[in-house]
Image 1 (cartoon, one colour):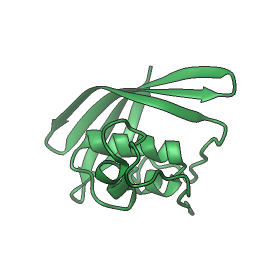
Image 2 (cartoon, rainbow, N blue to C red):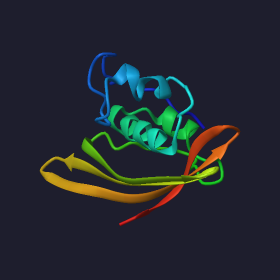
Image 3 (cartoon, rainbow, N blue to C red):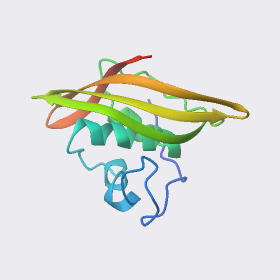
Length: 132
């Protein structure tokens, strides 16, 4: 299994793709390997990984029982925005409901998902999700 990091990362002072803060204060450290303080922050960093094409971060933050062998990021998809609708944590389990807006050529759409996370070895990881 091999996953590379992308060179499409924003500059440290640029707005983070997830829309929360500057990249250096938001998803930047998580993409560099820092643990996410919450499942919501992990989900935001995973969205940012899709935006910048960082399959290594996606693999690293995916529960091994549900992680695919290969993560093929569609270079033709442009992620245009994220809205977190709900986030709950209960001990070592959490859920995050979000909408991610995308464009592929002239086609536009929204990915709506209710995602499940668990804390494993002290770190939040993505387990799976229900797509609406």
